[in-house]
Image: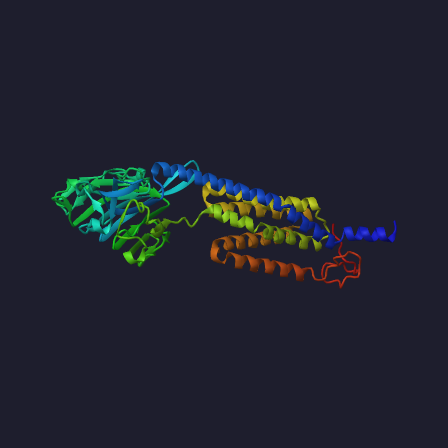
Length: 468
């Protein structure tokens, strides 16, 4: 064999060639990592489908908007057709908002199990009270005629009326009790809710006009995900207490007071009408009852242990995870007389990727923490034993066991840190790279001889270590 052929053979068996082969295998294993990521997304999508199914029966994210007083009236409009003036009468509806609104209530959490999925839901018990000033139709339309005050309706918009579990009544001035009827009582509107006819209240209707009146209503409804309100009054106050320990306050306004503990939370909101760009009166021809959608506020019943997010984040660190594991095996191989074949590296990589599949399948049944512990012990234990057998060294197998213990432990901490996950991952990668660089500093990567010494894996005769 020529000298060139022998040199090529030594290069093919050199640590440098093996290093690039391992790098190629890591990139190749990105394909099964992508498949695992798709599997996690598919299972998370299935979980969301189950949540939607439960929401259709129990109640979805709830938003309470209003109350509103809606009054029908007519206007006369003259239109010109040729030389003739034609007078038309159009019916419209005026909307009036309350002067004050106070909402106090509680939310009791519950967990429903559907198949293998746990769905967080709640039951809200709310008391609404406040005052409407005597409405003036001229604030809505100076040209209004034929105002039908006795047909005025008290309207509450509820996002998912299927969640209403008890009959609700409206108390007017503490004397008259009116029953709520389904829908908002307005033709041509798609807003969900309930309404009560104020014409049945002798204390609110005086003659043919609607005067100032106080109101009170108790509502009990179920929902899931979140509970929101709107600042419908000139001065809106909301007080909510719940046994859910992980609230996420969302919307346009945050609570002015809050208390959060392991037993739940209490929160208070105060919102003046100046903080919202919605008039206190308007005509439905100018805008619907959904004008407050940009000014909602409330709480999301946040689930901090969404293991699908944790697993997806773990998969994103998969390449770094594989690189550290492979470098551990590679360094141990360089200091051993045994050789690890590329196929064996591939087996190690596939086992490390399968860790995520184990984690996902177990987490859906026993929770993330216990699933992580079981998957890490199973994968780390199996791979440590495999490396010990491949290198014919119990000591090197124990070293790999320690490496995997540190690796899985750091990955778990990175997932838990959340806000500092990127920083922790960067530090781990830098530390791993530094360790490999200095551990292999005296390796003859080319395999052509002329190593820098005997201290880093070369036999006592001075020949560099060549590994396939």
